[in-house]
Image 1 (cartoon, rainbow, N blue to C red):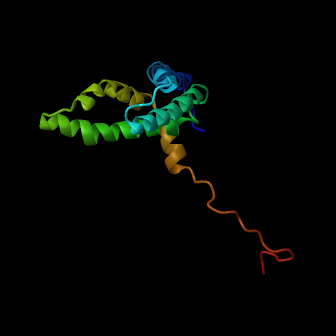
Image 2: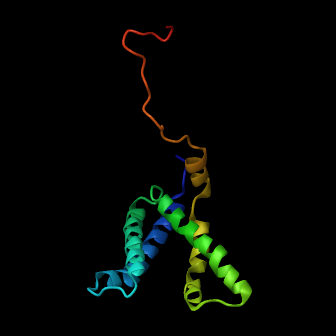
Image 3: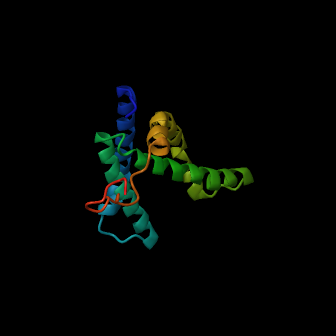
Length: 146
């Protein structure tokens, strides 16, 4: 394992905790209330975010093991900024939903600053993958010279 500083680990923990508290305050009341959402797809999104919220709680304890969850969040937010928000801004017609969601862009910049990129590179790009199939062994009585 690459040596990650305690400071970096604690920054990751702080980021997971910030997400967990933020989602806990804004998301949980909507999910736990007994009303049915006006738009059924909203319920799907809310419950997907609930799963993400639960995983961020694990991230507080295991910040490196939960990095793929944080990377997933960064990737989809980056794609949204590049493919939705920037084109709307350039055209001069930012939709209200887009405008309402621009506030978390500074947090995305913090994500990029906190992620230990050398660790990501070493463990997700350079490290050999897990085996795709079970290793076969030589039949009984056979030798490698056969």
